[in-house]
Length: 219
Length: 219
DNA sequence: AATATTATTTAGACAAATCTAAATAAAATA
DNA sequence: TATTTTATTTAGATTTGTCTAAATAATATT
Image (tube, rainbow over all chains, first blue to last red; front, side, top):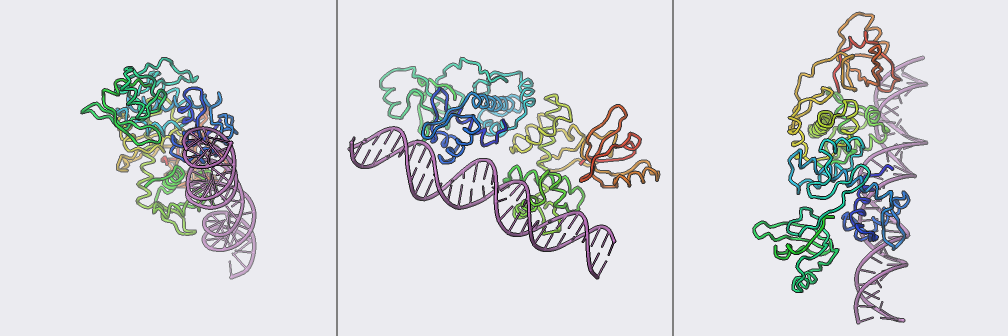
């Protein structure tokens, strides 16, 4: 299966958004890829043709087994390159995403297997996210972390450790629920506050008190 | 200057073929890039627009100073990645070209400067070809090598060590002159013969006796 | 349930990079 | 020099990935 960079990016986004077993919406993919819904529909037809996604008009999109396999390969490449950039070239974890975004599309089985060996076959990347092995197997048990300690930048809310109604009300008002996807925009050291963003909404800031109590997992 | 991969590949080819100061023909570029002359003409117009090449209809193509600067950056990236693949990942010199061909298009100043440092700022790649520094300066003095010992695959004939008329006649008959570009197709260990190819011509084999006396430099 | 809103798709267009076939220019040859 | 051959360019088409604007479907609201 020979995919273009654009196709790989769609597969990767769908994988990232699909998370559970649910289908992914056209709009969600468009937002993720900073493109337009119409473009997503176009690409969906192509990827369906290639049997990498299941897609019926208006019914959302989900990866086929084959699509998932490819997604895992891309994720593997991305995360291995992130390891390389941090461990070998001394980048900090927040600089590597964009570069890995390009490196991940260099397709060579041999390159990736040797890179992995060179890095000591790591099982998680600098953000703590698991690296699928060559067969696409992903090491389970990704422990939940509180939002104030999370290293990944794309997170999903997986729980709240403080169940006080004040907090829950606050979160509710902010639109934060179980399963909500958050992007970390910035962390402020002086007060450990964190600026986050929910898809399609303006960014806002959470105090350490709040972020301590939001349990998240990385996407 | 933000270039597409296609544009970068054209710039690189023109640089490779321009070598001296002469202009490069449309057909030569088409052959080098395994594309059609009409496509080269199309791209020539775009690159002229961007002031990366000098081009007038039917007059051939040459890089501007700016174009040359970019070409040297691409060559630098390519050769550094080749070093990485050989020195760090244990590839053999003949496997790395294609992979480096992809890696070279990942553009990040910081990535390349750090990669270079990681490799010990090498000044030549695994084929012995010089690596331009960050400012595009290339270490001079590329010593001529006899064809039987050359490690690069794309060579230019730079001299003949045995001036016997028999050899010169033979070379002449084969179409090998000073400045002729040769591609190494295959080396045969059993008799140290080498199969070479001149642009637009069928490949042919040279015995060790002959190749010993042809001095070449890599392109 | 009717209506309004939001999500998605379609239709038609565009830019990049390529191609083929035909036209033209330059070079080589008779 | 006239003619043939080769090199190059043009014209028009194609593919990929994208877009806008309009149409349609699904969902939410009154």
